[in-house]
Image (cartoon, rainbow, N blue to C red):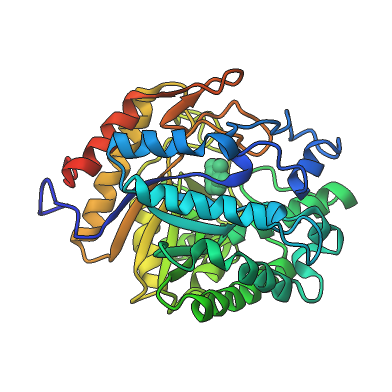
Length: 411
Ligand code: IFM
């Protein structure tokens, strides 16, 4: 229980919303995702990203809204495919564009957190073999060096790679697609091991690169936390409970813990949490129970996941400050977004009261955006008209922004 009702956010606590370039900018034509969207390779892609939210041009409107709503921080990603459209060919215009965004955020009183890689690669990088090809870490570091003017001043936080564990999971999906391998009926496939190793290497190198270019920048990466729990069952003996816990750990370890352990000692570690996965005695994920409330992504409505994710991450990376870099829900019913987020924040406040060192909260997402294959799962605090691009804040945006303004959690 939280012994401190209505806790004030600690000084400097980040209060923001997150986005990612490919999901909101539109026209990311040099990326591997744009290619995949038009390849016909998978029926998981229902529609292409197209113009997305046109935020490449409308980022000022996005930032104006967030600042006006009461947020003090904005996490956005810069797009490698735009900055380096061909190997070694850097677009000074794209770098200047992202620099303007950093300055634009500051002018509006928003502290920018910059993500260097959020799922998308330049197509040329993917075609030379992606993360597992020799020299991928060097190429990533070269891109970061070129992009340094974006974050060298006015940026306090840089995220090297968003959800590396999901990048490795997507590599496993790709292998299954192209070579007909099996996918599990529920939960995530085992992340591709070579991609996992390559991403850990790339992160370590990226971390050193950012620090050498801008030592003041607090640097980390963000992991999609897998809150894996033993399936609730009839009362268990202590030995049965231990076996059930170890089956859940077997599921969780390669899918998230490996990536959390790799971040030990970083300046911060990003916790991204949405739901939980129930795991059976064989270490395999089970389908969402039939009677559970589901969100538009089909995930179980389980806001308690955030507290579990924070506590587990703190235990795995002791001493590393945590930032909630994503938490949210895909729903067409904004009252459920408020209910979900309220319960998640209560769990965060309780974890903090119990000593977990949380330094910020970013909601996913600022805008309804391209959810990797479809615009249907709406995660946004702000609705976006798909034809006119008019932005309309939802009641949840005003509610969450007001917490930022009062600096007090309503619990
Ligand atoms: O939209 C994604 C985001 O790109 C990464 N984290 C999870 C979100 C919801 O699926």
